[in-house]
Length: 228
Image (cartoon, rainbow, N blue to C red; front, side, top):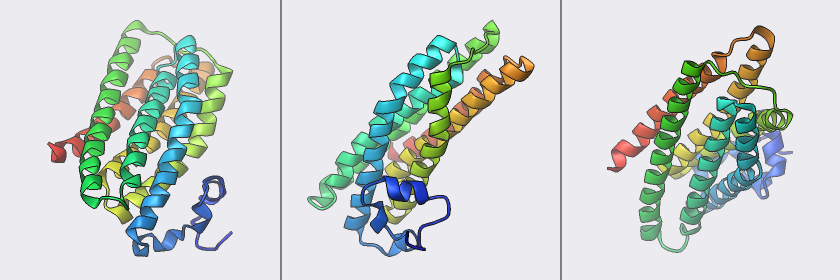
């Protein structure tokens, strides 16, 4: 493996097709078309992950009454949808820069509103869960997928944020935040269930979910406001 790959990126470096050719320390010096191709790879990986994990986690979380798991699954699906739009956007990069710019604006609004909708849903459900005093139960499938996501999603977020900086793409940055939030929600779900099991802290799951919702709302508003 080339020495230019940052520490902690080894797994993704080998897992994503084409990432072996990406010199991470020279992202800002790469051509825009080449960066766009890597952005397509990263966003395509998010779409595949969302399809494989999102629905399964939401189903498992609903069965276990774990809001953090449901919120994590929802965020994963939203991230996958936003990533699909960005795949379209960056595939246009070499064909029509004017059209790509228009798609960028559309993608930016979609990502921003997706962040806000996710934040509102999670916050409302968290308040309801706190009021009802419900507690999540253990779900082996949900926790296994959440544990895998704690490792995978931060790596995807790192890739997207680095590429977003090189491409000067606010939409890709917002999508990177969605991936990072998904990893945080996965960790929150694991922590919430652990606290309930160990100490009976039923409030831990919805409280942590509300903190994540606040972060999603802040970033969503930051993304949407300039695009209006």
